[in-house]
Image (cartoon, rainbow, N blue to C red):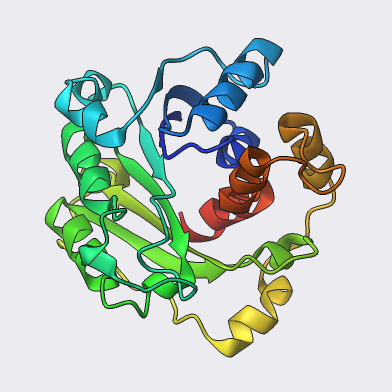
Length: 245
């Protein structure tokens, strides 16, 4: 599938969808350092050459998003988690960093058949989750959601994340009710024993090391530390899609 990636970061999610065999046709990332990482991986041949856009709101307002209508099969977006993280103030809709409305604008304009969305698990209990689900339903998507940690696929850290996979009526191949199906509650059991439900992968760490070049030790700069902390674990991206799609 042809993927339009929003909030691309340093590209951990891209490697995850590369494991799924997807083709990357556009990157939207405002952070300058992460833009440089994406460009470097394009030069290295790990990523296909495609436009790198900056602010997601400008991406819509400039008309660039509309150019992907009928081109992008899937839009992926790990929209900023700070408004919903338990480590923050959980201001939700009142947080200026809330980019879900901008994400929804891209979806409405680009009209992909499929969505792969990611955020912190705290979004579920933040009070804003219903807004996200309602917006997806209003746009005609049906899907599933669930929480999956990095530890569940063999990582040495937890990094639990909420994943939403949704499909348009066209993507499903038949007409569905305008609702998004809830897929399981994030429970203590699923969090503690995620590896029982999700198989461990043996090769993703080696692939990530080659792709991001950040896994040989502690990051030695603020930019790298931030990019790594905000990044997605490739094996989790692939497993989330395989389990929820």
